[in-house]
Length: 355
Ligand code: TXA
Ligand code: MG
Image (cartoon, rainbow, N blue to C red; front, side, top):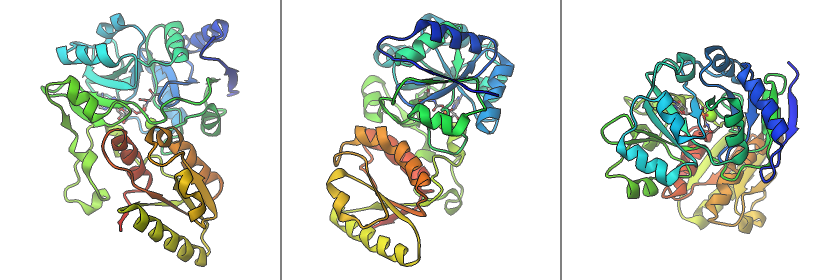
């Protein structure tokens, strides 16, 4: 398949191009497009065959359900059975935005979209290109992140090209995304809402808006699943798969900042002696400190929004440059740090050294 490329400016979107992209989706094709979190790989969510194509293009296991993107609150009740009061509160406050809510699905949503589940994940994105594309496509776009399964999520159109060229009909370049980590997912079907995936909408923000909120216990595991007995199974099926993993071995270092830097410097020397290509992901202020082959900074120290925007790109850069070992410090787990640590722990395969 030949992939078409189009560049669209969010501030003055080319409506002809978006209409054309919407036609592709209406006819059952696949279009990668920007959202405020990461790029998505879109298909018509109500078309069984189209949704099934997404799994093939990504190389994704078909029991891993997709998120349905909408752009009109009135469309929500067309695909879900019941919208609890608490979900209305969250939608009022946080939609459009980086929040996905899970509801009981209606018949109209095919099994291919929900991985056979009786529930459906729904998000109303704030990115203007995404909104217009959803509108032009008939209102319901099923979209996972637009990466090959297992690779870091795409935050630039270039990442979509790397992973999906020749496998999808179109890639829309809308520039770099604003957030950089995937949406927060919360299950609204239980009595108490339950956080399944942390994101830019933080646990603290949700606590303020809800009477109470649970947390999927698998989020707080610290070791590889086989080190726990029994390992709690994540409630969002996709969270169980190998994720974001760079090809090199990533090691997270937790503890006092100076001690962590000392440890990383020592390990870099050791690994270099073994002939390994070393990489470090650090703050601007610490760049000079490390003698690694590849030194990548995410922005100013403690600027976690900046780390979120850059994390997946930096992991991809480690791959491109052939890093064998990658070191990074942990970040505090509150606020946005919850989402960052969730992604970084996965990328590191739960290898964490305490210093
Ligand atoms: O920010 C985002 O959410 C991006 C953009 C494109 O919107 N999308 C995204 O999709 O991250 P994906 O497929 O990479 O992640 C969706 C996650 C998976 O872990 C999946 O298992 C979970 O959502 N999920 C989807 N439907 C679910 C359901 N009915 N019940 C539980 N988990 C569900
Ligand atoms: Mg994904």
